[in-house]
Every structure is written in C-alpha cells, then in structure tokens.
Image (cartoon, rainbow, N blue to C red; front, side):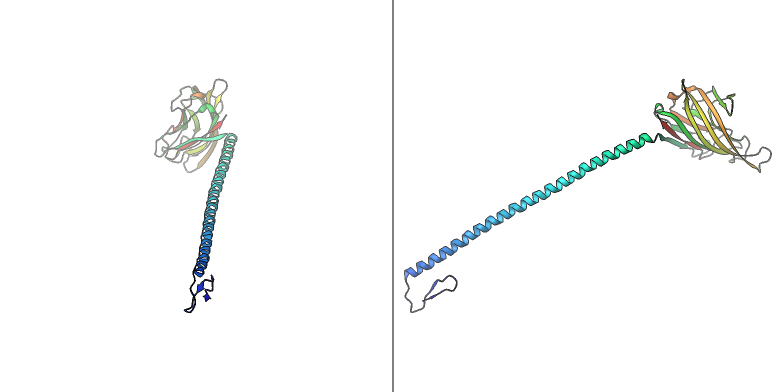
Length: 260
C-alpha cells in the first residue's frame, strides 16, 4: 500500500486489503491538520486586529500631534500679535506728531476746511499751506476758527497794530497778474497761557510781480503773527482757509497735531 507525499495518507492499490483502522488513521491526520489551520487563522485574525488597533492609535496620535502643532502656532501668533501691538503702542507714544487732516480746493473760489477732533489732546497744531489767487491780487490768506470771523483779531508783522477778522496765514502782494500771486508756508497754532487764547505764528514765501513793471518777479519771505481773543483753544472744532480774493483750485492746507 502506498502513501500520499505530503500528509502520508493511505493510497490503496487494487490488490491491497482495505482496513477500517487505516481510514481512522487518515481521518485523525486530517482532523489534526484542519485544527492547525483553524489555530493559525485565529492567530492571524488576532494579529490583524492588533495591527488595526496600532494603526488607529498612530492615526489618533498623528492627529493629536497636528492639533498640538496648530495650537502652538496659534499661541505663538498671539504672542507675536501682543508684541506687535506693544511695539505699535510704543511707536505711537514716541511719535508725538500726527496728521489730523487735509483740505484742498477743487474749483475756483472755494474755501478749504479741516475738522479738528479732540483738540484738548494737542499742545499745538502745525499747518502747511499754499494759495494762489484768481484775481490780480490775493491779499491776505486767512484762517478762521470754526469758520467764524473774529472782529477782535489782532495781526502783525512786527508790533500788534493792525486788526483783522481772521488769523493771518500770509499777506501776499497786492498787485500781480492773475494766477501769479501765490505762495505758501508753515504756521503754528497754539494756546496762549494762561487764558488759552488762540495764537498763530506763520512763516511764508510769496511770489509776485513788482508794482512798477510786471515783467520782473519778486519773492518775499515774511512772518506774520495773529491773536484771536474771541476764540479759546478748547473751543476749536475746525479750521477754514480762505483768501481775501478768490483762490485757485489746489489751494489748501494740511494740519498736524502735537500730542500732549
């Protein structure tokens, strides 16, 4: 009687005697082999489950690490933002001059007006101005507090002997070809201590033509001072610039404030 090559099961030839014991022996071998296969399958299932658990844990850990990284970045951003805000605050504190506004005419004959908010927070104002007349002379370039005339204004280019209804930014030449009488400068607007009357100190340069012949051009550099007794520093809400004669488009001024 022969046997199979792998599991040594019986193989009968035609002349062999078939015995029950041989069948039982073969069945026992087959049963044992199948049992081994089942055990290995169970073991593989356990391994696969363990691998899945490990992979799940790794995925959770990866997601957690990613979340931690994002939180760290956000916290770092908060720190950076806080530091930036602190730097900006310090810079603003050190930079005492701030721009409050600007106004320039867009058509002939207009006035230019700048709103001043919170004047009590400023020690003085600086005004950078320019003006050009449409007529043959410009005359005075004027500044009105809150756009209202003050008949008690006292102006001067030396002693305070002349009166004006406005604060004087400049006194341009009284004779010039249209569009040729122009100029500009800077002015300081500040309160006189202790009663806070509004005072203006203006330095300017103007271009004009001579009174004798209009072929020659003259440049003038002067300073003009004005006090407005009717206005107090705390009452300033706006500043309005105008000319004694109509101004050309593009005339106007910019205002800066010196913080306390």
